[in-house]
Every structure is written in structure tokens, then in C-alpha cells.
Image 1 (cartoon, rainbow, N blue to C red):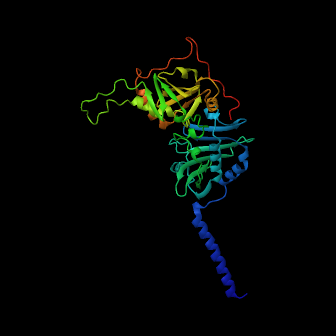
Image 2: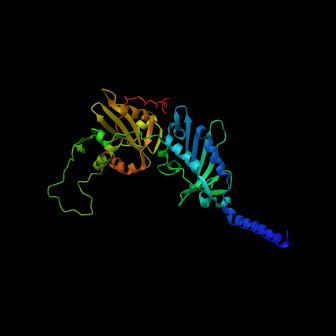
Length: 375
């Protein structure tokens, strides 16, 4: 081999080595490897059939669902049945997370991505997934802020400093900390009687009936406006306006329509005698009614539902719904609270607390335990 040919080979080798070095330098801190989060997701996919608990934390908010012999329940809410679709959505979202960019590994910069833990700003979510026969979680991630175009999130493994930008989402179930986060985990709707399925609504001595698809209140207004009323300030409220009656017509017939609670807890004996409690009787048909009790706790409105006067043949739809109500009270969705508030703001004279149906001197019995057949 002559000298010129050897020289050309050496030059080619040097060029390749330099090129590789340049490419590695260009990749630098943004290079993506196949370790860390990737390994966790592979394990999660393999162990998916054995998953028996999913837990999410955000600040003081915590949601934990466990799989038992009768299905999934939200153990952080006294064992109320969980929505399996949400758990599946979260697990599938975790499996589908794909690392796209290496981010900071400095703990003092984790807050910039929302992956600091613990996190006083409540931007971070800790997600843990457990499987049968394993004491430690098979996934333990800190999920941070959402990323746009393409949609994704910042993520790091709990206990490790390296953070990543990942493509994917955990779905609605991962929005823990939002007003609707708990509702996406609770099995529901717990009632779905449309206004067209009701015949009558009785509230605080006033009765609403439906005729030709329209709801009317009986008795009508006691003092109808005069034939020739004096001239009024156009900015002043109408003297015939009645926010309480408007709220009745706009809310009560729809109380059980697609009702998905925002939160739930076990019923307590004192719930039956809560101050300023409102009583609403909803008549489904001539033989079946629903007894609804509403009260305020802070800014929230809670409701207790139970079958009322029921005679004749059983109503299958009501029977199924009542099984979900037994022993629980439910938080009304926030969007409904504003419409219901006028019923409470009418004053004690207009809205009186219902009289207890219990005999004098008796005490309400404690709520029944969760039936073993709940799935």
C-alpha cells in the first residue's frame, strides 16, 4: 500500500471520529435515552392486568382508587364506587408517555417546570401505581405543567433529579386539583331523571306542575302588579321579579337530570337536621317520589337523596338509583350552585327548615354500611 493511500484512509478515519464527536456535542443535554421513565412505562404495560391501586396527590388534595372483589372504589372517599374508565384512561396515558427532550436536572429549577415535590404552588402531581404482590409502586412520577404543540407534560421520576419533556397526557383523571377532578373519578351519574320524566315538584309549601312541557307554580304570585304601575327607574329591578320562584323553575325540575356529584362523603346522623335545610319532593309518577334535602356548607351545596312515598309496582330506574344513594350525601356541581343560591338567600321567613319526620325524642339511625354487591 503506497503512502498516499494510507494518508487518505487516515484522513477518512479522523473525519468520521470528528463527525461523531460533533454530533454527540450537538445532542448534548437534549439527547433522549431509553432509560428511566421509559423502563417504568414498559413495566407498567406488562403489569397492567395486575394493577390494583392508583394514587394521585396535588398539594392537600389526594385521590386513591383500589380494585377489590366487587370492582374499583375510591378509598379516599370512604369506598364510594369509582369510575373504571377514568382509571383506565390514566394508566393508558402513563403507558403512552414518550420522552421527547431532556430538561433540567437541577432541583432548584424543578419549580420552573412544575415538577418540584413537595410543591407549595400545587402545580405538581405525584402519580403512583401499585400492582399485586409488590410492596413498592411500579410507577412513581412527578407530573408537571402541560406543554403545547405537540401536547405533553414535564415529568421526572420521584427520587431522581433528571426531568423530561414528554409527549402525551393523563386525560381528565389527571387534572387533580381542578374543581371537576373528583367528579371524574366518582361513578355516575347517580341520577338521571329528566324534567320530562317528573310530574310534580313540591318545595316549601309551593307546588310546581308540568303541563304541555311547561312548569308552573301553584299558588301564583300573591300580589300581581297593578294595571297602570307608576313609572319606575329603568335600572331598578322589576317589582314583580321573584328570584326565588325563578330559581325554583330553573333548577328544581332538573335536580336529578344527569346528576354527576362533584364530591361525596358518608351520611352522618346530623345531616337530617342540618340548619336551614331545604326539602324538595320530586314526584316521578302517581306511585313514586324522591325526597331531596339540600343544605350549605360554606360555599358548597350538599344533597341527600332517598326514595319518598313509593307504592304500587316498583320503579326499576328509581330502585337502581336509590341503591347508589343509600348511606351517602353528595356535593352539587359548582356550576349549579349559583343557580340554587337564591333558594337559600330568600331568608328564614321565606325558606323554613323542614320539620323532622322522626318521632319526638328519637335519634336518626346511622347510615348503613356499603352493600357488598356494589361494583
